[in-house]
Image (cartoon, rainbow, N blue to C red; front, side):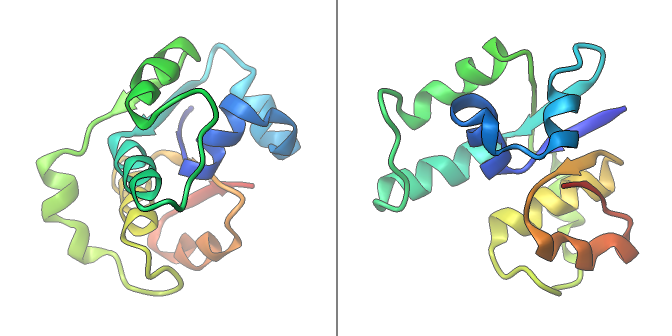
Length: 132
């Protein structure tokens, strides 16, 4: 199965793995699973860092592509189709464009989303599969 990490799940997997849910931790620990991290998360981390809403100890936003690969995750690009079809995602719970775009990538690419964000449940009717 293929999975997409939410941005907070990425941070927890790298720096605070004890915060992960049992099922998410199990999936991340299984070398047979393909785990993707979207470039959208890199953009979100960089933006939040630049405006002072994210503190990173001993790393900068530019270090994340390398950290992701070292962790054994795959980088998911933002494809033209992701951007051009984004309007198909109804605006339900999330107003944050980063969250919405990650949700859309998970739905449109048929990836299971690993997130602790309960608001994601609203998108199950649109095809979102979520692991908490």
